[in-house]
Length: 86
Image (cartoon, rainbow, N blue to C red):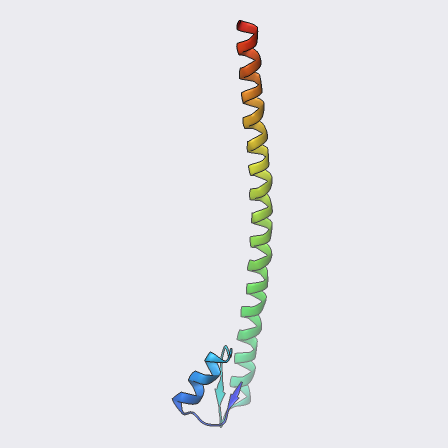
């Protein structure tokens, strides 16, 4: 987001409106490129983190299901063992 004025009120409104960064005029092209590069890197890392979280949640669901199945199997075996003992 380019801000024409550097007044604090405008900056605050820009951030409240969803801006992640700003560049005040006059600006240097090198700074613009660096800021755009940084924001793209943050976005890519955010996407990677979101993807990794999805994979971890799926692994947790699978392991929870496996654990529940093992728990029910153990109860079934103990019940059958108790029946044989009687």
